[in-house]
Image 1: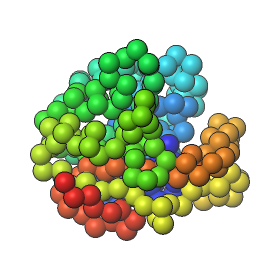
Image 2: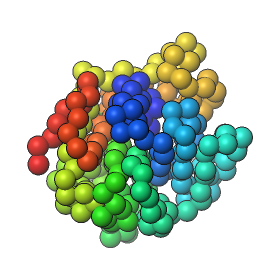
Image 3: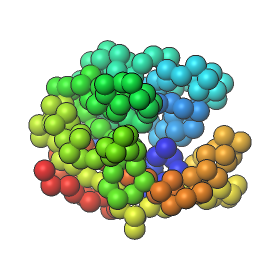
Length: 224
């Protein structure tokens, strides 16, 4: 949920401006809060959700926003269909733990679907950079897990991550929610209250894969 951190919102805005990006693509719509926010930042937002319950919740929230396209589909298949000349931000935030699945990290399948789509910026949420992150069966979502597949998307990617000192988490108050550009509603408030329950839920890691070297305040370069 990048929208819970004002610093990450600003990082995405900076990437938009640096590369003149018009389209934001998201996997894992959840309740539609991030897609709604990004609709105010980008000309077009395309987002997918495979879970019936979350799709219906997001549909109600997004149906009147003309520059948002919500698709009910598995994220791997959704991403396979993208052919694009323009540079696009792909924000990968789909998670589902299946103890019987061969590949427990959906993001690895998503990156396979994006292989050789070099005209992309990839942002991965819940990344292990010593902030809050996803771990399945003892394996964290870290750079070693992701590196090989990311370099198949673009062998020239430069990698960056956020740091604790740059995090600026939205507080669950009407004023702070409004200042972050968010809409004050029950879903937004519930998510923020949950995010503030423990530090590992509050401060979440991000990985940014960018086609060229950049300087953005609050992002630290990862050396391959």
